[in-house]
Length: 276
Ligand SMILES: [Cu+2]
Image (cartoon, rainbow, N blue to C red):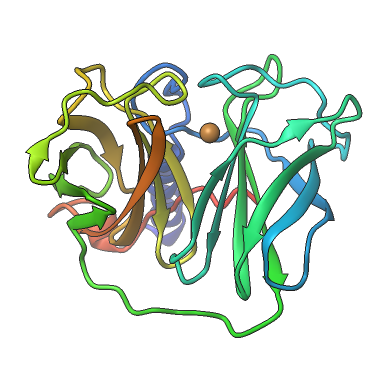
């Protein structure tokens, strides 16, 4: 086989992997699977604190590929835009719902720790597809980088949350979270944004983002998600759940291994970075 044909086949294979990773051709909206991202959008910050602040104010706009400010967003999971903010140490997680002015300026209170905070806007422009735009905020002070090992059980106040199931590269796998309170199973979770839980997955290596919604099911004690990891490596999972009128978040750390014989296992694969 000559070099030209080999090169051609390699590009084809690579295209297939990325198509799979980004979910091109696969619909996401109401399916309880990971969101894909098509069109490229920019998150342009208009105002943000540069010093650590327990209650600062973040103002931004979302711009399309022509640089036009997007002002029309579809309602999705009860909101027009979901803002996720996580520092590069993966220690501080916030799930916020900014408000939009008619000119497309979004505003939200936000707490900012020293270091670098990654901000993800998760939305669907009117008539468009699910999209994510992200940017980094640099806050004065040292950048935290705690070392993590796999974390499958998390205590959140009096709650204990356990992650069951494994992340499989390139394949959708069921992740189930069991929620207990003072050792007793919680079976009266409350809907939060139209679901019994929300799961945000971030790849440890570059902060690449996925927002996963649960499968249909009862109000606990177990809630399941179909989650996939496009590449092997470490992932941070943030589960939001509501009980007793309070939304709480449990943070897990899982490793995804390449499935034997998969392309990634042979050294290819990727995930949406959302900002370039
Ligand atoms: Cu949200």
